[in-house]
Length: 152
Image 1 (cartoon, rainbow, N blue to C red):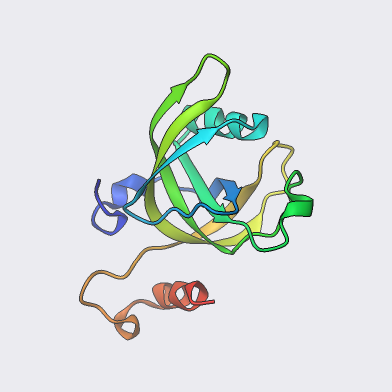
Image 2 (cartoon, rainbow, N blue to C red):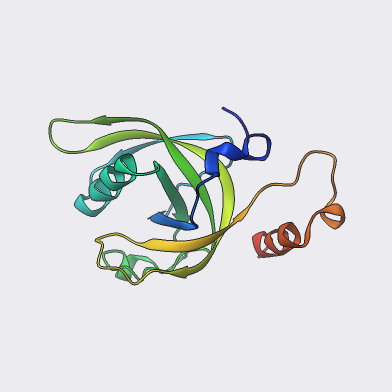
């Protein structure tokens, strides 16, 4: 696994639009692997669509109070997400997926598409981690914005 900062090809054609997979107790970090069992119909469709496309999904953390609106597209989520690439997948006979997401980089949700898809889709801005040895002050303006957002 290569960190995004050292292999920009992983997200070279990234448009900023990415499916959101909000969960209450699962966090994906850059350069980490996260195994997931996908069983809800809307998220099975999300995985199928991602596999047919660029293989990217953003893991979003649900905020407290999400329970009453989980089945909707308006459950509250944190604005900083991690863009992940489906590193492996297995479609099970019952339609569920076993996948492993590889964390690529942090991103900030700018807004959500009001599309007709069953799952949430966001327009995001990438927030690559600062290279080792650099301080926050020595980073670019864009990185500085992401640093300040991530500390909320």
